Length: 232
Image (cartoon, helix red, strand yellow):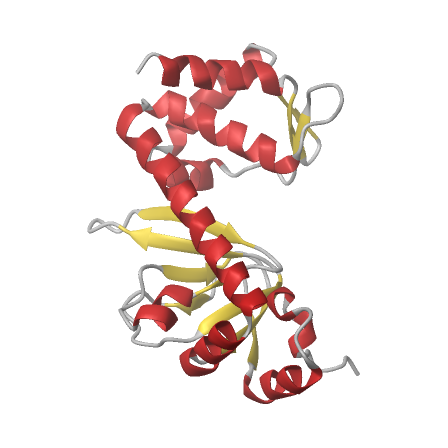
């Protein structure tokens, strides 16, 4: 039988004292979510913080017309829900599992206790919030100043840099990004994404290989994005 998950499986809690880990083992609630299952509803008044141990979850907003806007994908080692736990305000977004996921939840009071009493946890939280601000600032700039085609270029570049560039200036993005997901991220249509990806393929910048999208010239793609940004 598989051993029950423990607090030590949560990356954020690495290095905490045995006593605190034992406390967290008593208060953490573990749950598995199916792909497509909702974890947090934006209308919920809950204040728990959630830690992803296995799988992948997606943070989304919905427009008045029901259009889905993707804010972030969070994998193992990541967490979400900390804003409501810290300020007591309503949820800022909904979260759903995009693949089978194992998630641990922690109530707002235990989370604040751990965060305020242990500097390492507080620092990790501040770094996470700083990263969110930086990412949001970049997205706001792109959405405000770039055309739809250029936003798709910028998103492919972001995925390439996240995947890592090899010594030949190539990046392998796996699995292949779904056009509808990319469209949701950059606020455009799936058809626009498909057209831009076809153009990049014809230019030899990207190429599909089995289950991966290969950016064959990351520097060239970066130059396309920066040229547009530099003209603003």
